[in-house]
Length: 321
Ligand code: FUB
Image 1 (cartoon, rainbow, N blue to C red):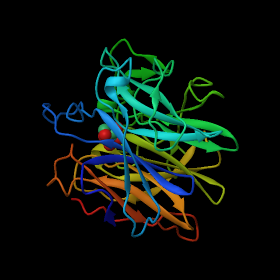
Image 2 (cartoon, protein in one colour; image 1 turned 90 degrees about the vertical axis):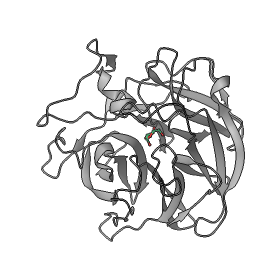
Image 3 (cartoon, rainbow, N blue to C red; image 1 turned 120 degrees about the vertical axis):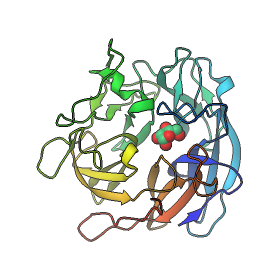
Image 4 (cartoon, rainbow, N blue to C red; image 1 turned 180 degrees about the vertical axis):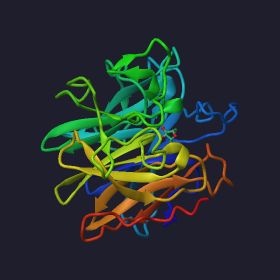
């Protein structure tokens, strides 16, 4: 396990292979005037950088500089959180989480002709989008966007894709947990092509995980990858600080919970992506060791990820409490 970019604080890495290299799209952490709270106000990020890497085991990342700045996004309020990038027909699409001028998280899109940007933002967020942490996954020529995060990520404020007048609520412990969402993207990659659907995660008993399953249920940080024809949906359990995964037979799920990828790291949040490169699989993630445990100042890490012969993932020790 090694740090990728000691020069600055970066978090939430989304990683893809473009043009034969690994491209890393992290959040850019910074000190802000906001104290740490459950709303995540202390994550007050203002721009994104892109990084590339040619040797995942020993290589140095190349910093391509700022690829998008909040001041250039017409609908911006504050807080550039997790993002992801997809490539279609030689164009690159950066999907990002940002609060609008009413302090509501939406998903935005910015477009570039190169993976290292710069990215030009659309004038408005994706129609009907809400919450945070977009992850875009291509399968058989179709692109799917996964998203959502509870607490400061505002997912609890929505039901059936409509904002709740009550301002949001959590299920009781024995009730099904709040689900992340997935929608196919439009052919131009700029909108949802359909109403977002819940991503249902089942326990081994075949029943949806409940709100009380705090060490297994979804909190934030969706990622999707395919391994041996199966679909692996992975995510953070948030307040229990685990990265978990669930396996399904298609991009929509349902997915069955299978276990822990990464035990807690130092720092409150845990977030990741999984990519195959030069015949090996890697977990990209972050922790707060270099900042002395400041949860809003996180650092990028990479480590090899290994599968067992039955397709399960070997749990990695995050080194936290
Ligand atoms: O970086 C801000 C937020 O922290 C992300 O959107 C979450 O997934 C968590 O890592």
